[in-house]
Image: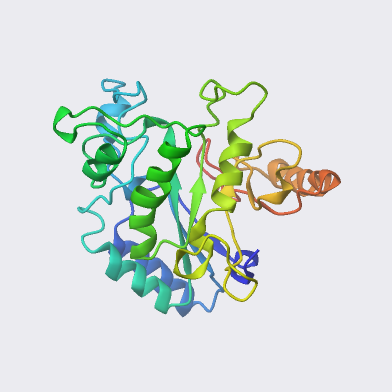
Length: 266
């Protein structure tokens, strides 16, 4: 793993603006608290929260509208590149949350290019399904959609929930494991996009993802999921991490403040 991955990470599921995140980074500096990674949860893109809260709207993939997204919410991040450059100057790395099941919908800024690449007329408004077992589909996803955000300054991705066991046409293939492999081996981790980088040209790869089963130790590091905020939960995380090392999966990120319910003041 790159060295920064072993440092402090900040994450909270909230509709932060770029101004608010800058203030958080400044507060860490003022308090002299080390910080190495800024994690921005799913609200970096339009999330249509009011519609999802009423369960009133689904996208063309029949997923909750806004659960999947690849385009910056410009009301929160009016100048994403400048924001990411600022974070980079502060010595931090940035990761964005992904829920890929919804595919590429017509409101995404890369939709015209992706649709054209996949042989879909952009004027039709037909979405581009997410098909992790299709090399052409994955080529467009990585090299058009995700690459646009990486050029702006996104350092790596948080591949959150969407194991999608029903997506894979190949029997006995775990899609989480497969997606972790695809992310780990993609050209983004080679300078100038070279696919076969030498030790001198390759960057250390990193993926913040879900556990894909035995053998997944090749693709660190793990996100252990939503937790209850309690001392008992924190105690279990120690045992959990040590036990995971029995199958060589040694690197985990745990939610210290929980997510499933409000965190106690202590």
